[in-house]
Image (cartoon, rainbow, N blue to C red):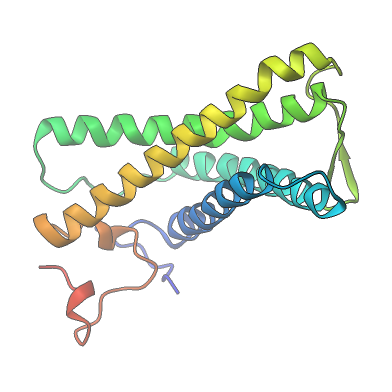
Length: 192
């Protein structure tokens, strides 16, 4: 578990926890979304759609918390890298944050337009994001999928870049967000 003590070379424990929670929820929601859309209409499919919507609301909430935390807590300094890599990394992070909000909000809009209310965990009804309108729902539906696949591609790019920095550049970048500190007995997690 991450420690709470400040370390200028690592993110805070809160930032690390939010990062990995969001990573797991986003990957799970993407996988669930891809799976559920291939199922025939059934009670099981409806249940998975509800789980997918609930995950979207949790992702939206955690994204807001993560953004608030990021805006109020300075991250550790960047590791040394070429300027073009720094620009790509910063642009990718901005696009990820944008999609953390856009994907669930567009999904909520689609659900509202299709006439399916969003009731979080089956107990907390949320207001419709847009009025029920079948034509609007059909217009929004492909956007949710396209944005979700764009998010998946950026998550993959982000993960590959982190692994490149860890295994090829060996610059300690991945360790700044790794949930546990590197230990002397585990050379794969040590700074090289």
